[in-house]
Image (tube, rainbow, N blue to C red; front, side):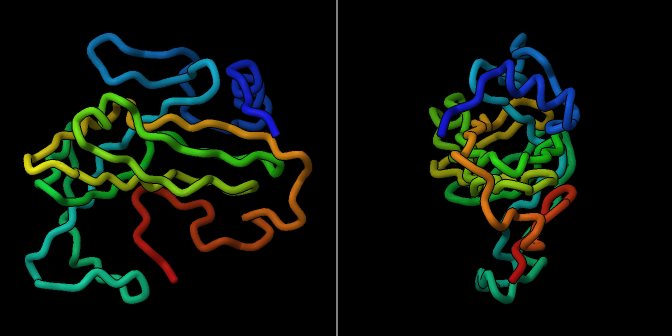
Length: 184
C-alpha cells in the first residue's frame, strides 16, 4: 500500500475525472486553503448546511432518522451552536478508482478551534459528493466558511483490486449529490 502523490492525483483527474471541479494548486489568500497538496487534496465545503436542532424534542435514531431534526441553511457561512453538530457536503464530486481507498482528515485550522470534521473512508469504486460531519466541541458558537477548505483527502493504493467494490455492492450512498442524510 502506498500514499499517492500530487502527480498521481493530477493524472487521475485528467484521465478519469476523479475530482470535479478540480483546483490544481493550493489556494490560500484570505481563505482556509483548498486544492491539490503534496499527498492529497483539500476539499471545500458547499454552501448548504443542515444544523441539528432540538425544537421537536426528538431522539436521533440512525434507523428511523427524522428530517425534522435539522434546520437547513444556505449561505456564505454557517454558525454551529455550542456542543452541536451540522452536516454539509463537498463542492467537489469524487470518483474513486477500484484499487484506491481515501481517508479524510479535518483541516488543522478548524481543529485548533474545536471544530471536528468526520468522514468515513471513501471506498474503492464509490462516487459522489462527500457528506461532511462537523462537531462543535466548544461551549461557544463556531463558524464554518462555505466554498473554502475544510478537509484533506489522502489517496491510498491497495495491493490489488478488491473482489467487490462499493459500486458492485450497490452501496446506499453511491452517486449522492449534496448533503445526504442517514439511510438504513
